[in-house]
Length: 311
Image (cartoon, rainbow, N blue to C red):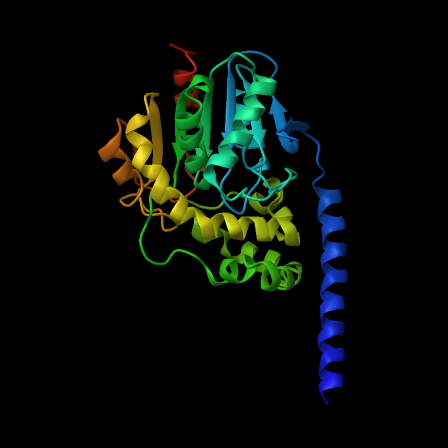
């Protein structure tokens, strides 16, 4: 009996691996690595570039996402005036993952390396969405010489207390269990996420084609999903330490916050940030967690202003 059970489990596991390999091949053909691979500390960071002249802006995506999040939203609003750099965080999109990559300091170091390589000697405006907001803040703390200003979109900034980590990230993060669990994600993950997209945007409508245009399918490659889970699992402790340093910030900060954001509490994040540092808050009463979609032109104007354009 045990032999039969073991054989069954083994067969299911093999089937899941074959399925995940096929899924990975298919999704990478649909959304190839068509950016620039920038070596930082011997690891590759995948960067999408738009625009050929003007000040530099670096855009950092949030959890469960990749650099394409900005390629069809903010970048087209700015690429005639600025050089847009959109970087995949470590283990996301096509950027290389490495030990310790869940640390905000290490992610900020990778982003700094992108600016050192592609905008040497310049200061850039840094745009960060959600988790990317935490990385943007860390970049400004650790390398203020690279940053002229921050535009934060529904940023996560502080330890938020109890809860906040989903069951699937809890399962995907551990080394052994996470590896096995992540092989199953291509079977169910894309369908589940497609059906839940509206809740991230609510009360604003989700834009048509969001899943495809932002290449969300890349998330369900097993290594990508595990990287995302480990980032999210470590974030609360990372922010507990990082937030104590926010009074060091001296760059201008503009925050766009959806008043009806149900993913991150504006009170627990932007509200706490305002107690520590000067922030220009743009409160959006009819937006949720994705303000750069519904209020894209306002966000673009904030980037221009911090870059010294359009004055």
